[in-house]
Image (cartoon, rainbow, N blue to C red; front, side, top):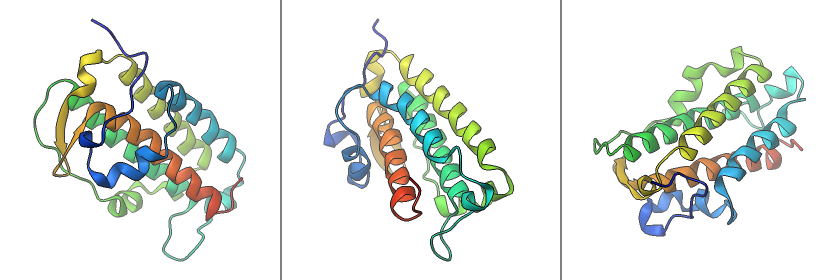
Amino acid sequence: MAFMNTIPRPNPDEYPASYQGYIDRVPDGDLLALLEAQMKEKLALLGTLDPERARFRYAEGKWSVIEVVGHITDGERIFTYRALRFARGDATPLPGFEENDYVPAGRFDLRTLPDVLDEATAVRAASVALLRGLPAESLERRGIANESTISVRALAWVIAGHERHHLSVLRERYGIS
């Protein structure tokens, strides 16, 4: 039995069209190495922000920088949970989640950015460990999440693309560099 050293790019029939933008953001190559590198990139980008800047919102009603990090982490937990369930052969359809309910409920702005980044780093390490430990044949397993069929390997690529999307938003709309 082979375990994961690489996770090939998913085919378009492995995920809903709504995830195409995330998957398109991920360059070809070693996805597991990219996921590990993203941890360092996020820390380098955000690790030195002062508390005031960490609570910055580029417009009224938009999430703060800390809330964006919390959202990335919540999303990753959910995507990884879905991958775990489907990889293990669980065919139970899974519900969607409403990000605009999760972020306020997370109360991320009551925490420090270093604390939220520590949590994000721990979640990413757990995600990489799970994905690296999956038997190769489990990557093509599919399940239903949010009323759409998606494969385990597509979920792995969505994790990377979702983070790339939000780090891009932090750079472009929040002026973080």
